[in-house]
Length: 233
Length: 306
Image (cartoon, rainbow over all chains, first blue to last red; front, side):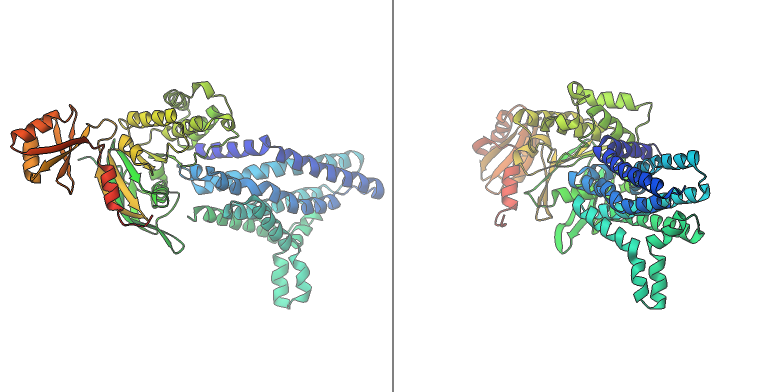
């Protein structure tokens, strides 16, 4: 456990000591702040639904920027060899990187809670929808981070890691757009894998255990694959 | 005889279709400095990576301190310290921070960690740079930091991959001296493609070529007696050995093909020559032989395209 906490501390420091985390969080908050303000003044609705969808869209781009370096950088610098020849478990290395990345994304998403507070002070928002929206964003982020980890564990090139992660994330986000052209059986399968289809109920205040289970199982599967990729020697 | 710290049996490793290590077997005894010598691409680093658990062998087994490097990987890894060839370090950390991190990762108790880190810093003379960022350190200091982290947790085995690469002559001497000192506490497996380097530090050398182990050759290590090549006219090996056994401090090491013999003797060749002459043998020539490693290496690799 001590080794795991040390690994986690190293990852958190590496992310928060680098400018990447602050630039990503800064750009995200600036864009969301602009969108929140404009939408609020124009529509005068006490809702964050549009913020949730826009945040999800930005996550598809932001997460690969954070995950691309996690293993690729260590593999290229050779520090992965140093780490994996020390008495630590691959699962601890993967989980430390996953949790540290989620800490950055959690802080980023959490800071948009200011918008919910503003709505609460000046209006009467549906808090249930807001809670479920945030839960959906966290679940989506965890799925994207775990996918990014798998890809980063497979290459020593950060650019390749980022581009492939973006490709997979966007494909999974909009795969349901193919559904209409596919036979019924395939249509159901495509929709069931669609991140957009799974996220939409959360963003609109309707939570389903199947959607929750999808995000959770996809995350766990991807983390397992990242561990296997690391153990593949 | 004490249990070997490393036992490698028939290690084989393929990278795709390319055979990198071909059925290599050897052992490393307690407090022994074992060298893996071979030209670049001979499979030295791959063997180290298998022993450290970073790579899995395609076939064969290896045990470190009795633990299988595949099925008991964690236990095996906790028994060794490793310094890879390119000395990879977390350059965004300070020296002290890095050593504390590696100490925790290597399972050093919180209560013992400060003392263990201080000890490593003192042994590797890192006091002056302990608060500096690793990115600011010279190659020599980085090498020392890498060795310092490998010593945390008191491993039974230290594995050094080309430890003198990129160092200046003074730093090379320091590394050599460090290996000599450390060999009294633990076993060391070190690779090099430089013959002279191996002769100075290793007790035994395994010679590798194209992934195959050609020979394991005994040297004296850094504390060895001086070695001499003595050429005798018409003497049998048995006669030479019998003559040397009659006197203390002379050790028969090896017979060479041209009627020469390698003999180790602390006090110089005089006593050995005296003993051989007293036994009625005709001494034609006496010369310093180093360890005989060069002769052996050239003989083993003769005719092999490089």
